[in-house]
Amino acid sequence: MDLNTITSELKKVINGKDDALEKIFICFMADGHIIMEDVPGTGKTTLAKAFSKTLGLEAHRLQFTADVMPSDITGYQTYNLEKRENELVLGPVFGCNIFLADEINRASSKSQAALLEAMEERQSTLSGNTVKVEDPFMVIGTMNPYVSPLFGISALPQSQLDRFMLAIRLGYPSREDSIKMMQSRDRIDPLSLVTSVTNKAEILSTREEVKKVHVDNDIYDYVWRLADASRHHVKVETGFSPRTELSLVKLAKTNAFFAGRDYVVPEDIQRFFKDAIIHKITLKDDDNLQIISDKREEVVDDILKSTKAPDLIR
Image: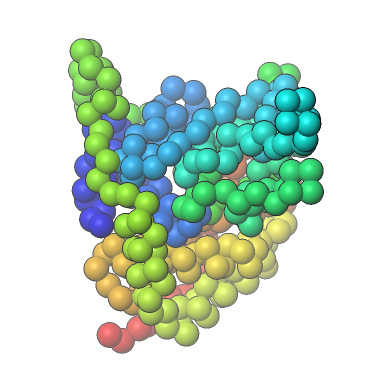
């Protein structure tokens, strides 16, 4: 499986966002979920569709709105009159490898929480029945950065955000990329040009190979020191969790693998550090409810710069 081949297919749809495309793919291969916070119309939903098509996987999409109920996501139990027995009606979170939770922060906290078990334990409990989601499985959540109850948009709870391995923004395209986008959509839908370049079996096999990547004890210590620095930073109320420490190691191993190495270096951690923790720390006296903000980025950069990376000899 080649990273360049994957991103080349995605670039048929999204121009000028190579780093973000690579990070989304590496997050998926690290068995993580991703939250994309951006204003409407920047290509979040289109990217999710292109991503599933490139990987040859099944994707389901649910538009989150204020009236979405937990049963709309996971399903419900009903009584079948013909069979005279109870049966489960599975929701869209099942039977797919990529679940696109579109505008997730427009739904109520109760509905958002319906995803927690599926994201963490890869299963969901319906009327006492445990149902597994597909393997591989990834939630791509998109959200509007402008939190306002007046418009039916609320902040995601910290327990939900902590289950997203990365938080990224695509941002607006450059002048050149905007022109390319308009030209490419003049006569044809770019999604129709995207082809599958891998499959479920190869993805699962590659994940097993990623597990063999070596992590030096100094790298583990580096991750802990970063976590400890986040918990004691003067501007931070709550640092990032042990779950995030594990996520950073997974991301680093996956990044090393696709860089052609069988060992992790500090740069593997550093590449994903901001995107992995910016939505998982809470700041003191921060009235900005966006999960990605200049204030948060400054704190994250300070944590990374103030924590010495190990000198590994290879």
